Length: 261
Ligand code: 1HE
Image (cartoon, rainbow, N blue to C red; front, side):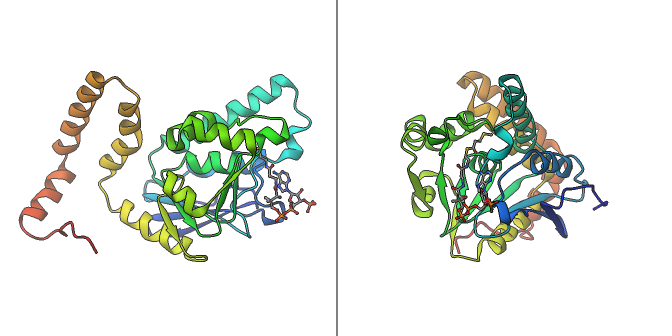
């Protein structure tokens, strides 16, 4: 990967088709300031085509303490809107990008940190992970797309509870509710995230594109439009050479079966 001008609060490593990006501001519990969020934008915008999946993780005891509150205190209302819209744009580009992102969470996954994780596609939680939206007690509101994404994951009612009461969900609760897809022991998250990312990187790029960009939009459409969109994307996917090659390999018994291990 070409040398990027990234802040030192973001570390990047490459493992074949996988890029690993690490929030590296543990002294501030990976609180998300503009430098990190804009750095994420730079990182995702510059991903070379040879990167087929990304793993996002974090250094230190906590995934992220959310928005860097020391930045917020100086913003006017207008600047606050611009700040939130900036997060929206960057997180949207991650969610509806080319490259699937697997997030590995541990410790505190708070506020904007949870909003960031929710904008990614697969979430692995270590048992230390816990989730909170303390915006209520700080006198603010979610601003990184949380009110749009989180109700789709856990329902409006649970988000209201999180925000009004400041309660936390532990890793097991988060797993049961859909905040994470995989729950692993302490220290095992990164290996699991890389394993999943490698699997994803082996998919056909056009299927991954459809899963990231078309599937969520179908889920937000009326049924008739959804069926129509599905038929179009299914035909495009199965018409391409990659699909033909993979189906032929299966029929010739050269591709893996679907087995439950
Ligand atoms: C911070 C932040 C932060 C820590 N902004 N500086 N988020 C919150 O309300 C969560 C606030 N943070 C915490 O509750 C705790 O820090 C943790 C539970 C995450 C970790 O506790 P601990 O004991 O390991 O660390 P600490 O001693 O509290 O914090 C270490 C340092 O990080 C300390 O700075 P220092 O200079 O005194 O060493 C903290 O001030 C600093 N720090 N969290 C700024 N968030 C797009 S809208 C989204 C809105 C939100 O995300 S609201 C949620 C904000």
